[in-house]
Length: 233
Image (tube, rainbow, N blue to C red; front, side, top):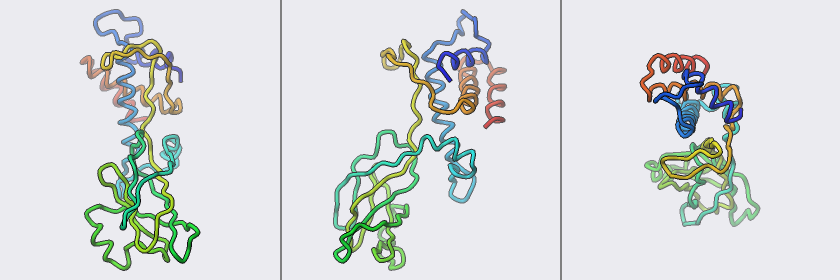
């Protein structure tokens, strides 16, 4: 969906298509509201109602809607005696999906794939003592933790050769050519359209309209657009 169509649809839902009164919607308000609801919508889709509160792959629809945000990136870092610690994570990182790693040992110089489990930093000492849970090259298993925006993949009697992080990235912010951002004082030099499918954009438009309606205290439109967004989600 083009940004021109997006703006027309949004103003139409707010009954401001040809309005020049004090409630006239500026282009930067459209951008701010739409980008905000994009992030909120993605976070809701990633949050599930199962035991682990993971909803990103609860259904085919969720998989289809969110697959555009999945990325796999090789991670560089430093080796210590007990773990591999990554450099800074990608700037567009939003939520963890999984970690893949290859390892080598003195007896097996050829890298082998390791199964990496995400664990809590507070349980590191307990896991490292437990012979059934600690890293084991023969079983091809180890674990990782997050600490200070860095990833640690633990090892014992082997070396971590390569690490790949699979994660959900932040959705790209839309931009409207020639629109001035009052927060930064910069003017957009490009036109960046929403990367989601048109059916998702329609849901996001309802949420953006509800957000702006609340800002301008149009509670009737707020309730209507909020109900529409929830119904179509």
